[in-house]
Image 1 (spheres, rainbow, N blue to C red):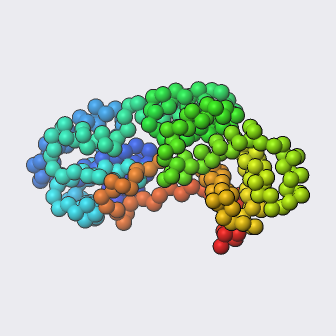
Image 2 (image 1 turned 180 degrees about the vertical axis):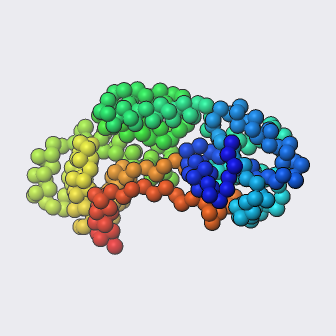
Image 3 (image 1 turned 90 degrees about the vertical axis):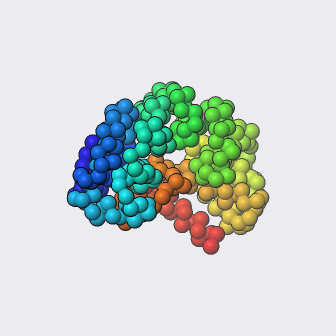
Length: 314
C-alpha cells in the first residue's frame, strides 16, 4: 500500500498500473465509512497475493487529484475507489461495500492466478525465442495456452512462432479459435492471411515458373499474387509487398482487393503489437492528469512501406 500525492501520482499510480492493476482508495480522516473500508481493502490486497496493488489518497491533503477523479466519474462522496488498469481509470465504486461485493468488483479487472501464470510462461517464451531456442519457446507457449486458452495475445504469439518454425498444420489448429475474430481484430486477420499464404505456398508453382509467367505478362496478377504468398511463406515479407505493389499500381481492386488486404496484413505482422492495456469499453471517465498511452517505437521499413501504399491508393 502506498499514499498517493501529486509528486508520485504518475509513477506510483499511472505507470504502476500498466504492469499491475492499482485500486485507489480516496478517503478522509473524518469519514467514518472510510475507516471501516480501509482494513477490508488491505485484507483483500494480501488475499490477492500481488494481483493488484492498493493505493490510498487523502482527499483533504490532495484535493486536486480527488476533485478530478470525482468530476470524471460524477461522484461527490467518499469513500470512493477507482481501479486503474493500463495507465487509465477504468471503473470505480462508492461507499463501504461488503467484502463479497468488493471481490466481485476486483475479479472484473484483476487477472486470475492462471492468467498470471500463463503470462509468466509467455514472457519466458519470448526470452527463449530471443536467445534462439525456438523449440523451448514453443513448448512454453503451449504450456501458457493450456493454462489460459482464452488469452488471444498468447494464442496469436503461439501461431506466429509456429509459422516461423514451418509447422503449418499445427499453426492452423491453434489459430482456429481466433478465426471468427479476424473481422474485427487486425492481428487475427493478419495471422490468418499469413497462414493462408503458407498453405498456398505448399502447392504453388516454383518461383522460377512464376517469374517466367510474370515476365511474359506483367498483368498476370494471379502469378504475382502467388509469388507474393510464396515469398511471405518463406519469411521474405518486404519482397512479398513489392510484388503486391506491382498489382496495386495496375489494379487496386483486383480480385476483391486481395493484394491490398495481404499487403496491409504484412504491415500488421511487421509491426510490434501494442502493450496490453485496459479495454476502453468499460471506462467511466478520463483524467486530464492520466498518463499517456505507451507509444510503440516506429520501424523505418514499415513506415516506408506504409507510405508506398498510401501513394498508390491515394
